[in-house]
Image 1 (cartoon, rainbow, N blue to C red):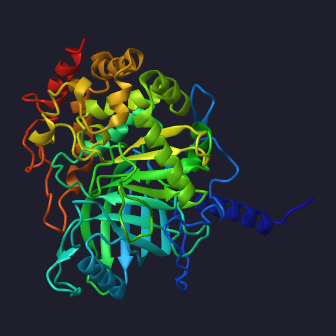
Image 2: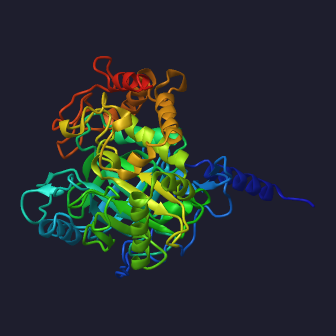
Image 3: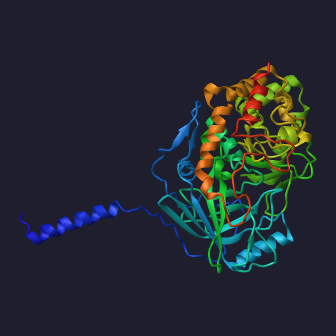
Length: 500
């Protein structure tokens, strides 16, 4: 077939243009105009509806030695250590004022307000309209801005606060997620001048194969109240994977089932020490708080409550021989003991064993008697030397007698074979050949992270403006984590190596 010179030139030009477009920077824009409020509760009963941008390939799936799998396609994209993502939350003025009013009327509020979210990772940009944000935290809760009852553009005294983002709260479709991720928690580094404590702990869980732990990386955060001359820069935050039904589903192969009961267990009026069935039990309703709060279930609250109460009664009532047989049937003992070894190694005293606080339980079945139960580690900012006299020196306290609140660990430690798993893991953590928590490797890891974020820390709140190697000012102990003098990792290693 013959071609004219004009045809040939046109063909060459189109080829060059197509190659040029392919080499351009990628921008992924996921945008949907705001619609009328389709509010549901936080647990989103139709979370499994909609598409997934990662359909068609599971190249990011991981596995364990038991053959279970973890679908980490979306997790590995969002919680990617190679990039510090930039997040801008844009809030309409009326919604921001409602946010402030909610806090003023109830500083424990869980109420959401409407917002738009821009998530930027390298050259990828996701713009999600009509998302939702709410306040999170316990003792860390505070008003996002100081001063009057309503916002005044350009004259704002900003304050750090913890944030929960729910991209699909109001619009439940595939456009309102980032590679399948629908929720994320943004946590400021309260009382952590090192800017690394919780990041270090959750990373350590991952290094040791504790797949029940959440992911956390650094991010940069801006909040733009519409009408303000520019967004307020909130600095460096921790970006944390929430514990919810999607967390369980992504790890269904390891949990064995994603149709069980997920409980948040915290010190609310009394410790969540698993000793009594007279504590407060309740379902997450975005209003009330309970010692044991049901976050996810596929059955009724009454049936889930009966299951947890039966677990508590057996935990406290069985004889030693009966307990040992039972706990091995309902729990992965090795996973539990290794999880707790890391918990104690990092000096987590605000936990189940020491303070009856800060953990999740997941029962992988709704059957009252037939299940596996898993402990999910939670809230690790008061670690690596931060502590109070009431709970002992976190670096020198005997790891074999960590606390007196958590009946589960007290009973587990009575059995030599369980205790040996715990001690072996403690010693493995501080063995320099493993490069996990010995002074040299741990301090260097933190220094490298700090170098990545140091230039981004100063922010428009005027708080936490620099990285400092010290513990929280309210604590009774002061340790270094990057220096050579009074180094937490060095002293903790000595304590652990002195164990029999």
